[in-house]
Image (cartoon, rainbow, N blue to C red; front, side):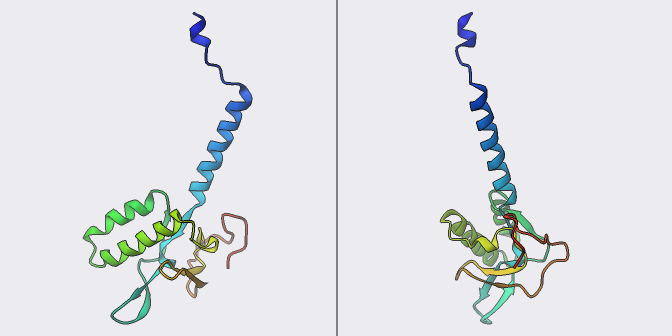
Length: 136
């Protein structure tokens, strides 16, 4: 009977585990990429173009993977997939600019890692970043 209670977790430890779990969930929930602000070089015309329409805000931890898979049938799918892969690479290597995370008011080229103020921002875009800073 004593073996039923051999593994007790102190309340302080359980509370700390719950707090860390909540922080992790918040981190993931706020780590969004606004896809219309991600740009890629069109080699044939040597100009920048938006790859996706406005309104596509992806949680980077799983929505990027799903978007990558969804572009197999798209006629511009390869260019979109290459851009998504580069975005994922920047996240993994932690070379993604902080200003880009959950911020639709900047345009970012994930290949060169340059960030500029966007000329076209969505009407429903939040006014503050996930970190509480005013948008660029």
